[in-house]
Length: 288
Image (cartoon, rainbow, N blue to C red):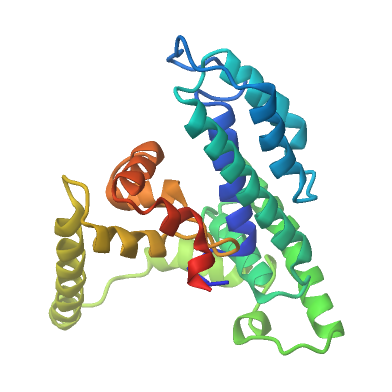
């Protein structure tokens, strides 16, 4: 499988989100904004074939919600029978494959540590270190993640696996207290250096920052001009699809593709189909 930057856990969470968004287009337990009249009925044979495809993968996740998809279709929540059957089958396949990958993931996989550290740092970055109510709640939440990280590191050591530099450098909430207090409370109160020193440093740093920002901006502008305001050409669309594949299944992530195109996931999927790239995007066997 190809790695496009998302962890197995994040792949699964995104697959779950797409599944839920299609099942509940306007939010859980809410009727959709638009109801479609006169939709073509799904025959018992067609529904049986879809059900057999989904059950054949021998993964029970989401199976209890399959009848609800059928009820929502019969109630006019979806515009097209063919699109509905194809989408439900694809969503189940993606969710089941991501779930299988998550279950088979090694408990000492480095990606687990990276996910935990991301969550840990996001919480710590919100702290004010003023020991107020919110700060104490964040501290408690960070300590819960710390316990998970320590449990992970214990498994890693017991398995005689090599620890990365980031793992070796990990510090708990209490150990970071003095450093964080200095950065967030004391440092902002320190007297500033003489104006001429700050100006000189700003000029040097500013020139370097300006060069980096200019190069990045040019790259973003060139790429954006290729896709902004119109459907990309087929080659560009292929590049975008490849950038937006799930790590665990290689299927195209319509939500991520939509973000790159500045459109919603439905429009992104429609553009994939209009470009003649449905097989390329959603049947990744050709990548192997």
